Image (cartoon, rainbow, N blue to C red; front, side):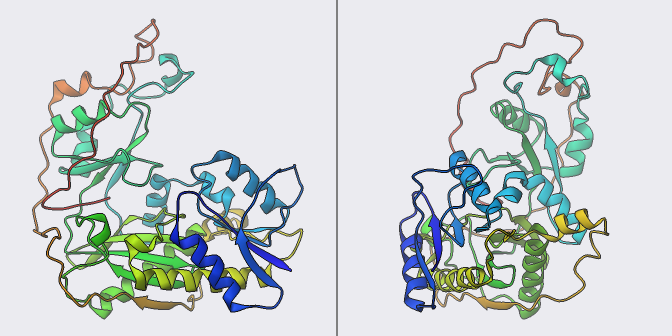
Length: 395
């Protein structure tokens, strides 16, 4: 008997529905259950052919256990080795290389020194940073968020240079990205399972959370949906994710990939709605069964993306995918308007002038050679979550 397990945390609806659906399908020799860990010994397998991982990003013990299971032959969804190495800034760079539009983005050093470092640790960091170059490239308004974060944590909208430095001062040891604002005409959130099953959902991030999958927009054009589908497939094929969501903000007919590192995406029925929930449960169950049938004990049963494959083979990145992936695509439809949703208004991006004097005193880390005393860290006051912007939004 091959067992499919699901490892999860605070979720309520999806894990049970997934297990029930796999078992209802009654595939010969395959069953599903909640993962149970009472001991994890090095190089000893867990009793699962497949594990769906929904929580290890928050629990290091689980991440270590999944890597140990993977090396013994378990097909872990998603690949715990890649997920450990992945982050949003790299994903943006990869998107640029494979031709998927993304907002202009730069990475910033942490405002405070990381633990166990001193000024001398940063001899290679330029002082001052080229704030003029950074601000002129990204423009204002912009968004600042952790390069490896998620769930809207520590996300700030910044209106100008002064606002940027005020909020940057509060980011403590987080390594942040500064990203161009995309004032969008439409927005999509797309599930991708198995690198080939795509669910495109028109989405309104400015709505209350439980209404974000409901909207009053007209259905998108087939041409736009085809482009979104192609980008979703390409990103997940290159990253190697089995279960992910990709978000797009559409500006002037161009879908910009805003967020596409969500390997444990929200699948609660209370937030995604019944129709989308049913699709995720059914598709995840079918895909897990497919992986269980193909799983072979003692071998590597993980999914590795085209970026890793081409790197290992020393072949060009963009030339990697020569064949078209056969995909199935569904589009969620809402046939009624929602009154309590954000209003979309186009606005021109205005680049704020950079004050030459301000940059010199706003550096994230003091000049390495100039300061002999250890840095005294100040306690930053945690800022409340940024209010929903009225004109535009971006995760």
